[in-house]
Length: 347
Image (tube, rainbow, N blue to C red; front, side, top):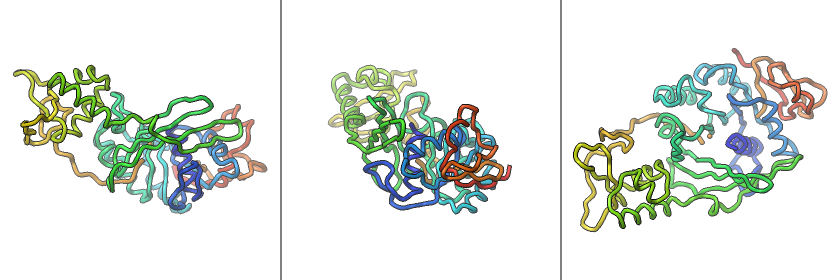
């Protein structure tokens, strides 16, 4: 549902009107959807159902066959200049990388390439394998290098889905309140509306209180013991302990010869340690300093194949460009009606 939600946002920004009931864009921009994962046909189907009264002008750019983002900057700059693009969606960053997303150099290369496009952007990323929802999968720089990040979670309900968006980082102010979006699916349309988020978003303050209560009752614990005691996941315990260090929690050395770190609450008369901050992910307690990196806006359609062609917005009278990936089964259905023209991209 990450791509579906990003497409709904892109449609709203491109049209300047509300596509998600209860949420309205602050303005209108020329939007491009850079796709490394799927096909024009599938995104066109979704866009038509999101906007049954008329699909907005969103430029879809297939990128998967052209390699990583770093190798397409000049091509994309030409396309953006021709179509006056000022905002884009990247779907998704892992496939747009020039190497493993776990490597810092790969993440930095991606953001340097993105900055050369000179447009605003929303980036779709995957979650961390360890279950840590506070940041995307891969290098720490995926979290450090964006101005804002949101965790997206979907759960099924009768007749549709509920997608929750939780703000994990925001550079220019306090974190935003969580959002919950209800998706209702019919054969003709997909409707999306904002609903109350309280029942769908777990409260981190409640989790923190559970940690404090357990430590108050049983004394210092390792991350794993605290996770087992509270029923929280190991990554959540580590994250909240790190965030509350010096305010709610204190880190203590364990028995001599052990590298484990014990977590405790700050009790009356206890002074929080003032040693150099260290990364709690490092068992050797090496001093940790966050590197300074360039900041870029982030968040995680219409077609631009490598060759020129055109598609009638009404879906009649013309055929899709040969560069579009349409299977035999798909080709029997209506041609994507939001692909009103295509631009030429150099290979």
